[in-house]
Amino acid sequence: MSVIDQLTGEFARLPGIGPKTALRLVHHLMKGPKDDARRLSRAVMELAERIRPCARCGNFSEHELCEVCANPRRDSGLICVVEEAFDVGAIERAGQYRGVFHVLGGRLSPLDGIGPEELSVAPLLERVRASGGEVREVIIATNASVEGEATAVYLEQQIRPLGPKVSRLARGIPVGSDLEYVDGTTIAEALAGRREM
Image 1 (tube, helix red, strand yellow):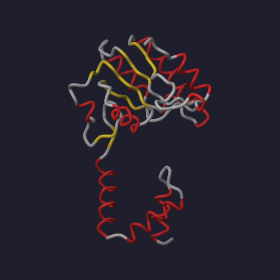
Image 2 (image 1 turned 180 degrees about the vertical axis):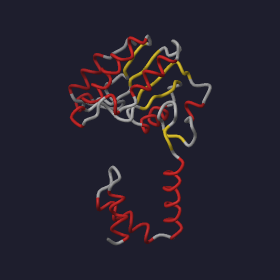
Image 3 (image 1 turned 90 degrees about the horizontal axis):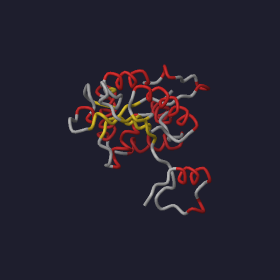
Image 4 (image 1 turned 135 degrees about the vertical axis):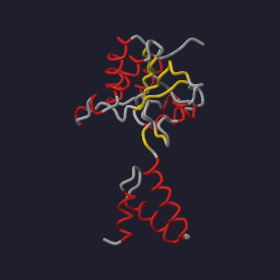
C-alpha cells in the first residue's frame, strides 16, 4: 500500500470525511509546503501524547484536571452531565453555564452492548455521594435521541435518591425557525416546556 493510500485511509476513518474528501486532503498536503505537513504531523503527535481525560469529569485535558474543574470560581454544586467531551465545548460556547461537567463517554445503547458499566456512571454517582450534599443539582444534557432519552431516565433514577435536584435541558423550537417547518415532536416538546413570560 502506498503512503498516499495509507494516509487517505487514515483521513477517511475520521467522522464526516469520506474517501473523496480524504484524497483531497492528502493532495492538499502534497501540493503545499512540506512544513505544513510537518506541522500537522507534530500537532497530531502532541495531541496523542499530551491530551488525556480529566481525572474528575472526563473532559479532555493536558493536565490532571481540566480547565473547568481546576477553576475555583466554577460552581461545583451544579453538575452538567454530557455524553461526550466535545459537548462540553458546545455548552461552554453559550457562555451562560457556570457549573462543572461530567462526561459519560457515550450513551446507553443495549443493542450495541453499551450498558451503564461501559459509561462513566459509577464515577458520577460517587462524585454526588462524596460531595456530602454540596451537589444541589445535576443537569442531564444528553442528546434528544432514543438512546439519549433512555440514558437521561436511567440517570435520573440513579441520582434522585442521592438528594440533588435532577433536571433536563429544555428542548423546543430553534431560534429563527418558522413553525411550518418544525416537526410535530419538537413542537410538542416546546409546548410541554413552555414558561411564563
